Length: 227
Ligand code: G3P
Image (cartoon, protein in one colour):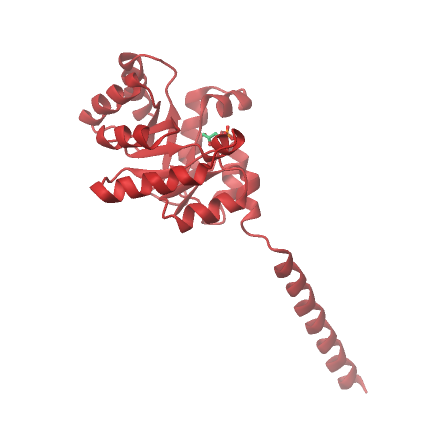
């Protein structure tokens, strides 16, 4: 399962990329707005950071139009920023039309704001490269976000759709574990959740004891030499 960062913040991306664990970045208009920077500048800087670590990354850049023609126009523009930029379009009727038109130009799309198995089915039939179901927002509304992932996995496997399932709107490490258990292709994480993946209190406690024991044994040896 590939791990992406869900952010427009280049410092967070640099820090995560140095671990070698990052395969891509997703952005959305809210995340870009948070940075207060020019859209094109942010997307191209993200691509430059990632290409230092891997050649097969993707950066999702989201369209702002609501009609298919507008999305296609924006998508063609974004695809010129970098060859690994993929166009994020909303899961709407127009979005599905745009995915197919962009596909004819060999431009890959990430269909976002997916909340149902039928939406994911349409995204795959349209030839989306990625579909992004939002698990956290479903949980926030009292639903079971991970059930949606399970259902999409089954549908895609039934018909051998190549569309990648990207688990988005992740809130905690439990979502990452469940995504991996269910066979999702990608998870996209806020930087805080990414950092949490490395940690376990028993790792810290265990390491502390190993180091203390090592220091103690070395000090005893030193003392023995001096005696
Ligand atoms: O980028 C899409 C998604 O991950 C947004 O998540 O936290 O705004 O529900 P969130």
